[in-house]
Amino acid sequence: MSEQATPDRPAPVFGFIGLGDMGLPMARRLLAAGLQVVAWNRSPDKLAQLALEGALIAAASPAEVGARADLIGLCLTSDVAVEAVVFGPGGLLSAAPAGARRWIADFSTGDPQAAKTFAERAAALGAGWVDAPVSGGVRGASSGQLVVFAGGEAQDLEALAPLMAPLAARVTHMGPSGAGQATKICNQMIVACNVMMIAETLAVGRRAGVEVSRLPQALAGGFADSAPLQIFGPRMAEHLFLPRLGAIGLMAKDVGLALQLAGGAAGLTPLTSLCAKLYDLPDHPEISKDEDLSKLIGLFETLDR
Image (cartoon, rainbow, N blue to C red; front, side):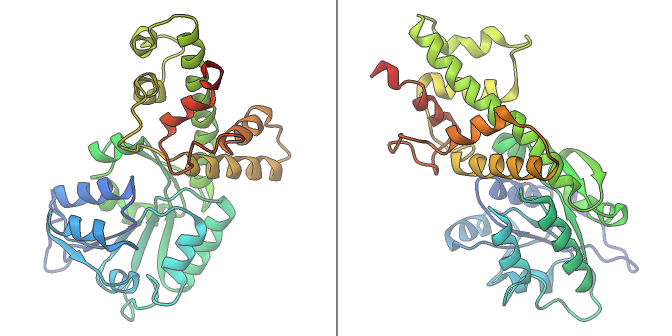
């Protein structure tokens, strides 16, 4: 349901920036909820496509999103992209109306320290900022069943609740700014190692004569089961790599953030460190970091060639 306007409380306008693998289905969820959405994307084709699907205002720049929208979601590839889109020339917060209050949920995955800095800079410009990275993948984004790890002020998270509602099955406030990103990195440490182990296991199983297309179903409900096994296992078994549900390069970035975070906490991360080396795709020029995570099966099938 869309937010109901009253004379004292007009319905908010929702903004969204970043229509990649995750951002596009998230923006579609907002449209499906009947919300007024103004969106911007670096490449105009996805924006034009989305504009045909609902009551979308296709913005000419991030600044236009900031000028029109009250509650704004970001889903970008890196902290560098977030900084440029929000704080750069023509950025999101460069043209907000005087006295207007904006709230921004950064659904991107990034560095906790960068999230703290973004929150401070946004506050200085009169905007509330919540780092709100998500888990659940493209399927969760499409179904509105994402889980959100939120860092920031409780009142800012409360203000962003109407934006979160069509997108998430659960939102957990993890602490001050940066805590959401730190939680997502913990999540990605588990996921990254899990996906790599699934690829290794399927390759070993195939060589041992197992009908590996049945393996995810056979392991369902047991201790080895996981959402990545059920999503990527069948795709790896059948060598089905499209549509992309998660890029190898983005997972490699997240593993790098995990090593950075652990180093700062004097942590020992032998498994994550090994995963980081594997995600760098050494000696595998046939596998691109732009490809789906299911393509990781190729790292372990070279023995069959």
